[in-house]
Image (tube, rainbow, N blue to C red; front, side, top):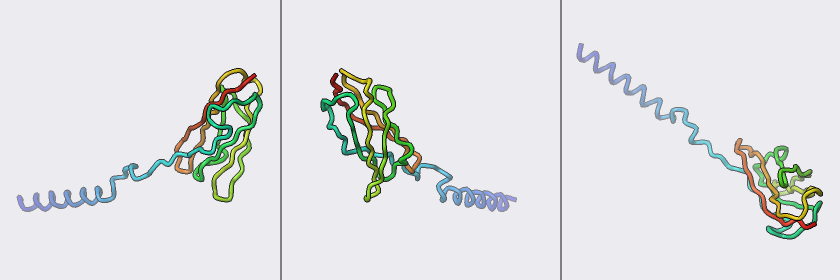
Length: 127
């Protein structure tokens, strides 16, 4: 009887170690690569007039339809064009109603890896 119990114990140990060999379904192997935003125009802290144009580049892993830009919590109308290198050029205009203060051009977007990214920069909007 003791030998029979040892065989069962050995069989159970082998089965459980085989399950762990495959990672146990852990999601730690999936990486989250957030979208990146670069080439901000106008430059950080630049003085601009209300309604001025702005632009930036979004990384290759960005879903272009998810790019949203706000200025002082007001949505900005943007146009997204794909560049030859796979990145996206984003152009828009600052809202004409935002005047006489600093404002953050805030960007949000989703990446192909189901990660959300955010970025932006600060400009001074003159009257």
